[in-house]
Length: 103
Image (cartoon, rainbow, N blue to C red):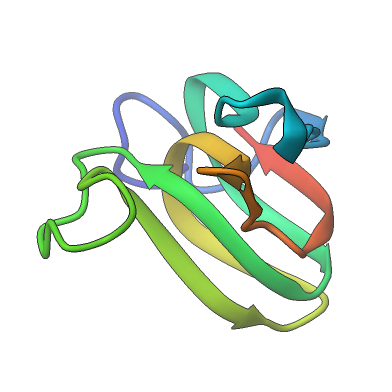
């Protein structure tokens, strides 16, 4: 959306994102998004995502992901993301739900 590539300033397509994972599986799980999109969070909580371009602090979970804490219900996140994590290192990290990807 906006100034990312040739996208318009408004969403023209949407997809429901359900990051599902099993912390007991022994590996990190989530939802890969290609092409990257902005997010709408229907039910609030924390959300761990990979922001296109990475995390400049390089001090988060894996140096690439960013944790948005306490995202309120009904929030539009104008951030281009390529991955929404369900769990990381066996710990659930995304507690928000009803997430919609906007293109």
